[in-house]
Image (cartoon, rainbow, N blue to C red; front, side, top):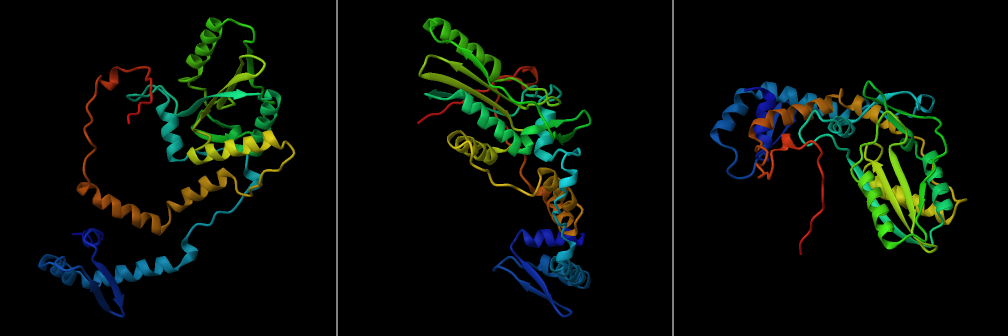
Length: 300
């Protein structure tokens, strides 16, 4: 049995090992230190002591950790997609079951006395401030932040004075167009905002944002900034020195570190003992679904 497998086995039982000089010290919950484990530890004592010393040295050597260094002069150079972005990018084509759909946020807001010009201007300020709102995916699978983009214009459909039937039909048309659309990733923008003016008082705002450019927490932060700029157009948003590109490259460097490789090996060694994926009953064979449609359901 490999040393890493031995450490994985005893770790899963909450048995602790450490060294004091040339001695191997053990702390184990009652009943876990079986004869088999004692024999393993005894037979591999010297190797375990050496490995534990090496691990301790790696942990205390902070210089072995990659450092995130801002590189503003390289901000607009291409860089890799991270793992979740790769999954979103690949999953939007039809190569996989339940593919051919984008991971995106789609919402509709009915707004009273909304100044659409200020809404549009605030959104432009967000685009300028948040670099990932100017991101596109290149043909080779890398992403790139565009330094400059054209002024964004929210498309407005004026339904004032139309009949209720016409209004309902037009609103449904917009929903059908946007709710499951797959925006081309090689073209800016990776979002789509539209508005339908219902009368002098009310309008409906349609918002579709591809999750390639943000995550769940970023979405809420974006809306907070949007509201702030709508109410106070002259306000300043907090500046950030670190680019998303800096973060992604630092994360990639981390994967070459001893700490990451050791953790990776730990989980590789546990794969055979992990439970399989759950078998979920299906109403239809997923390979037969070419245009997935998702609906939200809830019960109380």
